[in-house]
Length: 401
Image (cartoon, rainbow, N blue to C red; front, top):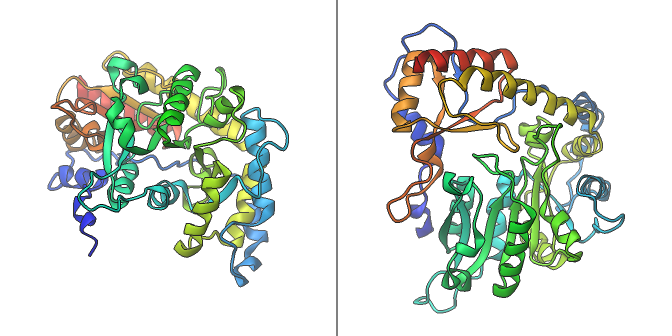
């Protein structure tokens, strides 16, 4: 077996199951899961109709690079959403559909990380935020690299300080994952920080993998979160050199089971990644591609989706703010809040007394030099329907009282 498999950490939900093991809630109130970011809103009707009309496509093998019509729809969406020039994104060279961004964020590292020819040489580094989406870490480990965790903690408003990453770390780095809007905090990386990242990536020849899967979940009363392609365009970097962005229909369009997303950016990098994926065999079926075209081409359902999340944040924050230091995130659908003590004890007690599952923060982070930026924090996903979110907030307040 691949010896690097032994380096993988248990997944957060494995740890959560262990934490809850043996507990029988003392309440008869129904279980409400705030632990997993699986949207529960109805899928868009326009996408469901496209799926039903395209089932005949199951009779043929799909192309790894996807149908050109899908790649054009994605390029058009990128152009509209991130204010790019018409024709700036080449659907034939700069867009690649993927079977969900979880798969792509993992496989991308397998394709781009170069292991040293000398077995005694230090492993390359893959940089990632801390707390983080654990796929980044697993991708680095199974690519034969070492993870380097840069903090995105409360002391810095949950934003990365790329200048604080030591020069010797940049020198060994081959790939850096960034997540904006962030999981779990919802913090959005600003233009100045992105410009710093681009300068450092150029200087040290590091690829940037920008996970932007929460970019469409934001308060419509504020400016949409900027994307890295948008920042690059503003800086005149229209070739998107060293940049690959990841987007998904899971959160934007309530289609987590469709397993449909895309990567876009540096054409030379995507050419090689396509070669890797040809062997990996993760092409999207034709019905999935047709459904994806319909979803990427429609914004009405996305606006309605944002309205639902805005209503939930308005209601839940009003209930919880007297008992917890909750704040509306810049984007995304998570509450990331300090519970003032051991968050594992908090989550275990909340499940035992109120039959509500939340996720302990340290299950999403790693301790570095004795400091764990997830310790003391709890992630709560407001993905259930409004009534359930309100009920959960009321029960959390009762638990704390």
